[in-house]
Length: 305
Picture (cartoon, rainbow, N blue to C red):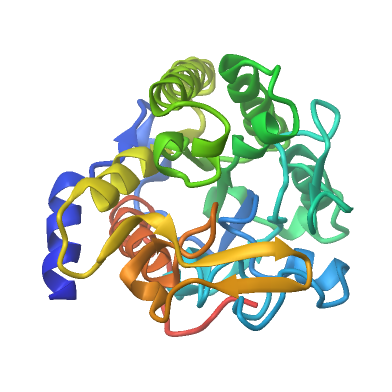
């Protein structure tokens, strides 16, 4: 059954590849993947700075904001450097993000990028064989609802510019997931408004990324359409996901997680914001062929820690 769901989603999912000089990158084989983002991507950074107190594990999986390995874990590739922090915004100078129920400040994506670029060994990174991945933006609106989606997209694109300025050659940017399906978002605005805000962000991101690509033909910029993938997961009538709208757990506070269901992997949402490990598996499955065909990433059976 699961293989059917996977094949169905892959036939729908097509990543957007922006124009660049492909002759520069023929037969590239990557040594490193560097990732920047928020709780959808964090593989234990918040868990570390909170002294293993958040996310509460168990029931969360070893510092992942899910009930099991997330998409980064399930990619199963070597050479991953993950700088993502749960609750991160695009830039702390734009809007500060806080994890652990808004008690723990975390670095934004631009700050994560700065940390990576300040590494003593960053000069050893061969950027022609390094893929940089960015996924974020949703938390900016959560921490400051007066921000406009185009402004948030522009802030995320500042991170892309930071990487390009320091020599990055391969960048993959996730667009925004459909906010109208997220349980927490539905407590903040009607679905039609959330749909409109998401579209504004994604349109601005695509337009901005295209412009940056046109001005940086020495680099390869790509957009990963997570919006279409999650839309398909939620709206398809799958026998596997018995609940695509409600959350399985409710995080009451930093020390209390109420379980509302017995089988999280039958759900799309493990809590009011985050995906179950099975959904993360779909993200990894959709991304892996894209990486292998577009980037030839070395793949092996190891988890990222």
